[in-house]
Amino acid sequence: MDRRITKALFPVAGLGTRFLPATKSIPKEIMTLVDRPLVQYAIDEAREAGIEKFIFVTSRGKGALEDYFDHAPELEQELLGKGRDALLGELRRTNMDSGAIAYVRQHRPLGLGHAVWCARHLIAPDETFAVILPDDVIAADKPCLLQMLEVHRETGGSMVAAMEVPPEKTPAYGVLDVREETGRTISVKGMIEKPETGKNPSNFAVIGRYILSPRILDHLNAARPVAGVEMQLTNAIATEIQRGGDVFGYRFRGQRFDCGSKAGFLQATVAFGLSRPDLREEFSDFLARMVGKPGVA
Ligand code: UTP
Image (cartoon, rainbow, N blue to C red):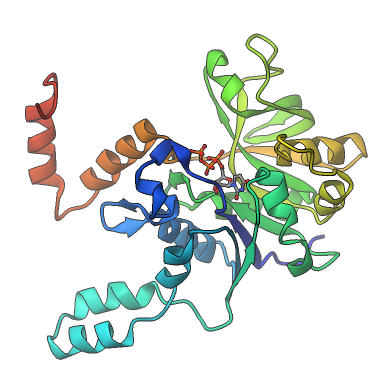
């Protein structure tokens, strides 16, 4: 039986090229859905799942992300003085305990596997840990990571969040080779990164939530970065399966938005905007008026 999982990695060192020119100076993870940066959604989900230690794998140009986690005493004082209690509460809820966050640098964007590997010295040799990709935002009654941790308590091993996608979309994802499905839990016999069209072993795509055995770090350690080739996390998980480790997919309940893509980000903005009581009426009226129109001239 695993110990309680209290550490999560947030790989945020990617270049975010799909959002250029914005990401020339703003980290993608600081871009906001309504009024909260993507990273805040990820932190909230982790906290609700019982995570206490937060490790960010960052890179050059991500200073604004680190600053976001600073406390803002002057601002708090100002809001207090003006009696803006609700806003003050909102602001304080984003405060992190001193020492709860650690940052490690990925010096070159050599892939998600490499980003996870960069944090290897901050994970104990016997420590199972979570990984959250903040650009996958998941709206769910019970946070996705919490759903996974509850099931993981029974299964042990490693676990990835899985989602069924149309077959033609599988080349964009890591895809599961399924041994057996039991309810929402999928026992996995293989994993393949971005399969060629028609060569997908299933329609179950892996999305940005993982619970990983520390052995995955050993597999990443054994894989040497090759110039120009990204180090895939999927390959390390596939190695774990080949070596006899248990790996499960979990079909989470909830709606996932790919906020790493422009279309996904816009969809999330609409969905989260409409879910806000203070915005719903005005925003839905506006959307109804815009449907079928070409947008701004
Ligand atoms: P993406 O594949 O979305 O890449 O990474 P990206 O660089 O962020 O964005 P594009 O494709 O250029 O627009 C998925 C996640 O893995 C992290 C990213 O920060 C993102 O959270 N990542 C990716 C790293 O931390 N390091 C890498 O070398 C690659």
